[in-house]
Image 1 (tube, rainbow, N blue to C red):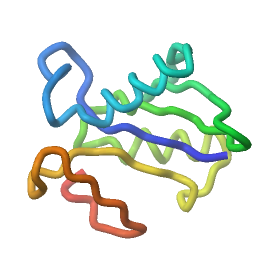
Image 2 (cartoon, one colour):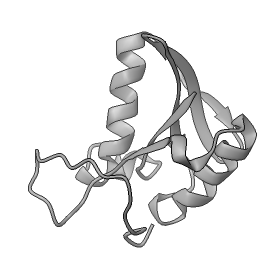
Image 3 (spheres, rainbow, N blue to C red):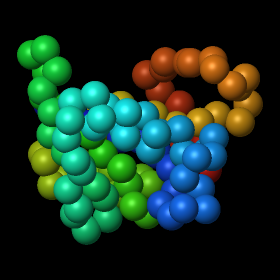
Length: 110
């Protein structure tokens, strides 16, 4: 099982901004797999099965700078090690449309 956490900020003010690309990604997966997110304390989530993998689609509801708190809570709640977490977020240092995949990195202030 994996967690796919899309970072963003809750609320209409940020809804379609670049900063919410993680939320938009999770919304797209929910639409694709025809599921809705459930609410939990500090995050929204839904389990989906893609091929043989079970994923937990996750949106932290703690605002971007505190998203690690919600992701840690989700890891504990679902008993998933941090090595099985994929985080989708924007990076202001990259061109729009570019994608980077990496195993390690800093918090970037989040």
